Length: 214
Image (tube, rainbow, N blue to C red):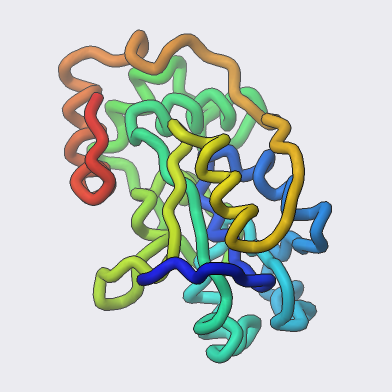
């Protein structure tokens, strides 16, 4: 999709662990609500900015929380991240918050090994369900035909530059302050050959689409 020159309306598609909290804090200063459940979707006026947290935007559209006219005209944007890095960040974030889905894992390696067999719930009309935040990033970003529906996919690795681009498109200004970061060493230190390959297989579509390497 072509990026519009300017737009005062935008949908932030919030892929987990891609600096979303920091981005939303900036957007919130310009009136961007965070609506994370079906009971909240209908409160959106279909004007200005919005994010639905980790809910599937197409599920919100299907529910009527978004009108098709607004969805078509709004600037839809997201951020993506190296899958090996994102998975480490997600694990330690869930651990820090004592999330039930990861309580029984002794370390990252055990969590990663389990990805080969564990059932990961799909992206849906909920913000989080079990390990749903570990889904491939494209699950938040493509339509039923497998095509990207976002107008712009920024990268965690070029966060400041890409946030400036989004602000320019939306016609807003603000300071990006990083927050909600998980604490861990460089992601490369947590992998061996087997776990590295598990991520390569589990997130193959993300890696191919966005050209990521370990």
